[in-house]
Image 1 (cartoon, rainbow, N blue to C red):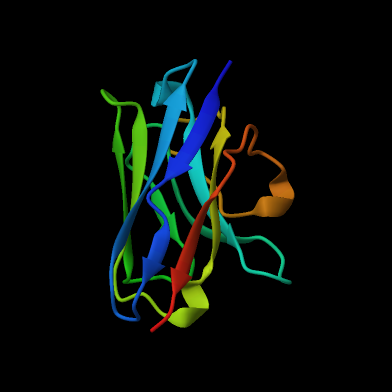
Image 2 (cartoon, rainbow, N blue to C red; image 1 turned 60 degrees about the horizontal axis):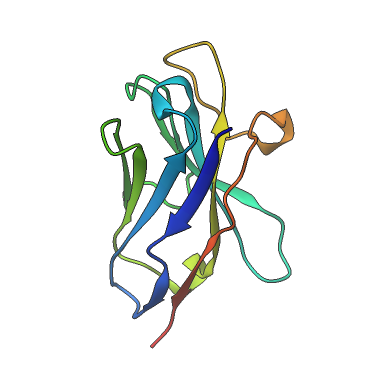
Length: 129
């Protein structure tokens, strides 16, 4: 059974960088699209980015466009979310979820699709001076 564990969060100053990891165990990510989402205190969970099973499709939310890159290491079974130019409004708990889509080039930022299951426990990112 697939399990996901996020790591890499922490406190960073505005303009700084962080690399978050979503490490999978129990199954290979060769068969899962991975989505990154975040939830700030008092706000709903929102999409950040996703990457397809093949790695060919990557999508980014407008709020982070140009400030993040997403990569997948099928050998290590890890998906990385590299964030640059962090802003205080990026402060949130960041979660990764897995979508067992059969389409190799598909991923979605649509949370209402309910495609993502399981989820990791989250990693906290705080951007503050």
